[in-house]
Length: 153
Image 1 (cartoon, rainbow, N blue to C red):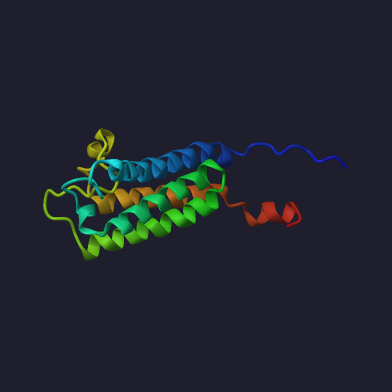
Image 2: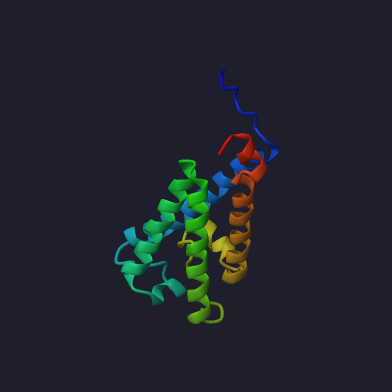
């Protein structure tokens, strides 16, 4: 019996651009922080909330963000979703425990010009929207129980 090629489902058609967008976002945020480290004597975007934390912690989170993005680029979307949700929960917890001063940028996305455009948004709301995107991707890539039973899993 020959294996028939799988048809692309409607959910998968939506999952691909969403997964790639989330992966690109993680690569952008981690890359932005790493680029800030490359600057002369810089450990985080200047004058930001992120500067309150030790350089090793900011650098480690940046590397983790890049790794999460690479998971998405490599098609490991479930891994990306789970790791991304953990990072968003940790970031949100830190924002609640050590809130930014009024008017202080988060620095969560580095200091590029594009990052400054979204810094005006409340970081907890931004994290909530990103978490919702991660959860939507999870729903789109998880096979239904009926589909698994049909495939003999």
